[in-house]
Structures are given as C-alpha cells and as structure tokens.
Image (tube, rainbow, N blue to C red):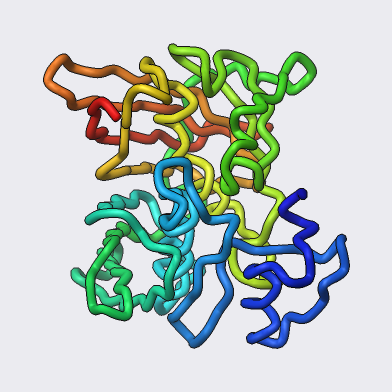
Length: 284
C-alpha cells in the first residue's frame, strides 16, 4: 500500500493518533517524524532505510538535524552555508531527543551544533552548521555554468520502492539508477512532510534526499556489498528554492574498503551546493 495511504491499524497511524493527528483517510498526508515534545521526535515507518528494518535511512534524521539548526535562535540576516553530519551508528526507529547549542559566536559568522540522543542516552548523530551573515550586493555573483536537466526523459527506478524511505520519494532518473553501477543524475521529490503537518522546507528536502547520493551512484552490487555513509557534508552557496531536488553524483571506492561520493545539488533555476560523503564499504 502507498505510504500516503496506511491502513487505520498501522503503527504510523497509531503514532499520529497519540499526538492528535487522527485523520486516517487514505489521502491523509504522512510524515517521517511525529513531534512528542519541543525537541523530541518519534521516527515513523517512512524513515526506514534499506540496511536494517529497525533503523532509519540517514536522510530523515539529517533533515531533522537541519530543522533543529535552522530553528536555533534563527536570524533572517543569516543562513546556513555548510553543514557536516556525523553518524555514530545506526539511528533507531525510536524516540530521539535533540540538544542544540552555539559553539562559536560571532558578529558575522557562528557555528551551531545539534546532537540526537536515544532514551538510553546514546548519541547517534551530530551535526554542525556554519551560519553566516548575508547582505544584498555584498559581493559580485559568480556561479558555474550548469545545464539543468529537465524531467521529460527521466524514468523511475522500482528498486527505490523496495524500502519505505525510498518509496516515500518520487525519483526520476536521467542517468544511472539504483541497480545500475556508475554515476547518476536524478530529480527527487519527497511526498511527505518532515514533521507531522508542518510543510517541508527546501533546505530540509535537500538533506532528506542528498544522503541517498551514495546509493543512487553506487559502483557495487547492493545485494553483495554495504556502502554506508559515516559522514556527510553539504556546502550551500545559495538557498535551495524548491523541495524538488536535483542530484548529480559519482562514487569511488578504494580496494581497502573506504569510499567517497561527491555530488552537485541543483533545482530548476540553478545549482546551489555540493555534497561529500565518506563511506564504509564491506561485503554483506
């Protein structure tokens, strides 16, 4: 059954009923998390990744980290320019409590950190974000000339529907595919909110989708190898304007089991950022 039409007795609907979100009609929107307290969230079934049915894909908790960074003493004259996410292990499909603080203060530049803990007080994820002041016309604009691909020749990849997170996003591949080794270029449009009924923001969508870069551009057979990101870094030259995310990714792997994925991020109007992932690679 589609993720936006869970049966009434599903864990997803049960979790949302506990928060008062009781619309169980087939067309009711669904989210990756439900809020249990100001900074405490329960991952819902669409967060489940391909490696372990009891663990989140890295995208939803990364997006939640950015949600917490964005919300910490927000200032319209500053924006996130770079975010580094570290995964300290699998992120379980269990409640996560987030603690956010400023590591470096500054008149023009500041560094914010957020960490996610389980109820067992285990830190499973940490993210640091550089927030910089902005000012119109402070510098001449210089951007690389990028050909933005359209969707007219894109195609879906049914493998992405084989696990809940993958099935929650509309994928349109213009190059490569989840089971095709090599570079990939794809448009990805999440169909769900990040938290309950709160509209998904473009920067949240970036981190929600971008953690898939290693999967869509894998050089190895998914059924024979693990290629798990231990860290992800995204530099944002400008703000993303849409929740439809363009990714052009390439993965390389060394014989001793360490790999990297690099990607360019773009929307319909411009390229706005770059991604780097570090991968642990091993046989299953």
